[in-house]
Length: 203
Image (cartoon, rainbow, N blue to C red):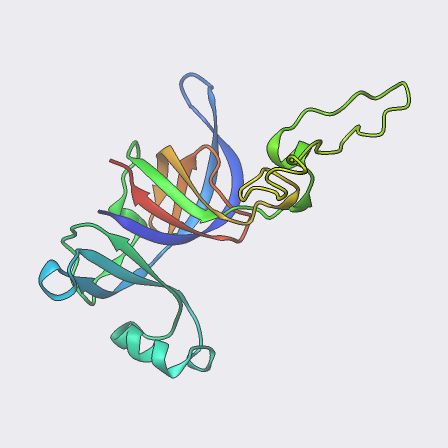
């Protein structure tokens, strides 16, 4: 399993020199990510690699986290990528681990939309808009009265929309720039500009 942590910088487009075709891409500033720990089946019961991301001053990290980071030094985040890997502690993962044309999946915290009604949140249909209607954007019936005399758990209703973890699969690496630690990914990835994303090999 190959993986790296980065920051979503925004979207732009790439033009093909021969055909002139336009490809929308997301620019991700990924790594460098030092390997903090390598987990094995013998010691931990499963295989995984922990990497650090976002170098910060030492006083910005708690002492327990500093001990966990070890020789990697103070970093803002520790992310675990599950699966077998050939990496060892002390190595550094960079964007050079990925090649143009490689299929990846990107995970991040989606953009929060705040409190939203059922029409926006669950694509409910609106009610009639004329003849004195009073339920234009109302959710409608949410259950029976006498039986069961309660609202069932999990009912699709108004509430907080977005702001959860999202994984976008089927993405492709278009270009890699190791000098700037940049990766261009075809299409859109979850999260706002400046948000932290996790890039994994897909498949």
